[in-house]
Length: 276
Image 1 (tube, rainbow, N blue to C red):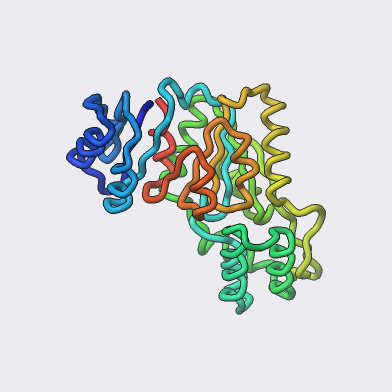
Image 2: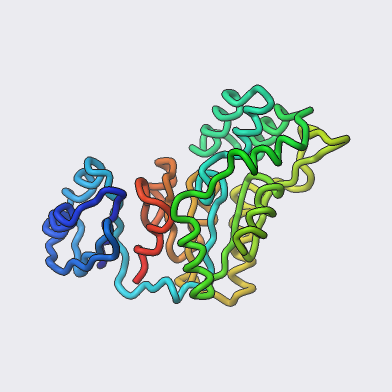
């Protein structure tokens, strides 16, 4: 197995310590703060050491190459971008605390997602449509490393699917801006320049994300090993379970427990180091 270790401030000395724990001396640098340790074995010492030193680690089979992927799917809010758009809209509507609390519970898997989304959207009733533009222009930022990851997808012809329980206003703009191939998200209802507090059509929940992932896989004729999925919340789990490599990114514990590997400290460009 390969053991990939990386972190914002990871050092060569720390990588050597982890290689020792894994019973290997075959260390290859991947960047200033990332290393691949080949022929590594699991050890009870690795996880607590990495937690203490803010280092991400992942055991992956040898031979997995990023260039062999046909599809990379990822969540939008708190994954591709640093914010939860609905929380920021809630801020402009004067109810951010209430909405953010519901969002956090939903992401932990404690609430029914469609029900929680309807409740949060209902709190936005009467908010001017212009608030959507303000959130996009003033608050939406790409997660560090996102542009490098997307550039690698373009270079190797890996198709990108952006799946979101958020809104088409944002996914559509990101699709155009970043050259994303496929998107799926929810549609906010508006009337007379204001949000009605309702949604149009079916809600994009965990089932819908997984269904869209499967549809794109079939369209591309991809094998499971040729796919990867990145998510942070409970509503990403069904989609992630279908992927050859599932990556929990700055994710809730329930997601980290079920994913192939987790990135807790590094940016999205760390995904590239997981592959050869």
